[in-house]
Length: 229
Image (tube, rainbow, N blue to C red; front, top):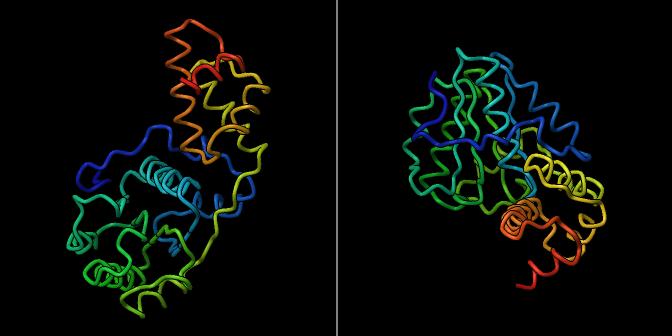
């Protein structure tokens, strides 16, 4: 099955099961329900680190597993190997996920290619999912008609996770790594570090490595030592 152009690899842990839902249950349900012959046009936006890429990659993986005879493409628009002309070759795909519209906003060639893809998929009953930093109403696009098309999509704002959700994220990631992470240490990490999920995940990687090297458990004094190093 042709899934991802240019052999763009998806993160293995980018699945719906690994997504901390928080207050985004409606968005999650709509993405999980995307299927061939059931057209969906969805635009979701949120800050960097809000889980946009995770959701689109999870969609691509689930779609490929559930519908192996159908075609889905996941395209991170900040990938410099991608060119606008690539979208012309997606007419046979059933669903396309364009991740990070902000990377090409204002680019005439890219916007024209996305505009044409939108119209083609709309007429063909296919699904298109796009992510961005901002809601369509605030986009400074080169093509006013593209802004209008994006504004007509089903728009979701990714809602920030609560501290309790982030504690759950830390607990899940630590468990996947075989790390023993007490609630006190997790609370300490939230109080001291950047709180977006990629930063928290990177921090756990760092602590995992330090813990293995020092053969130490994750305690607040040890974590302080690692962070101050």
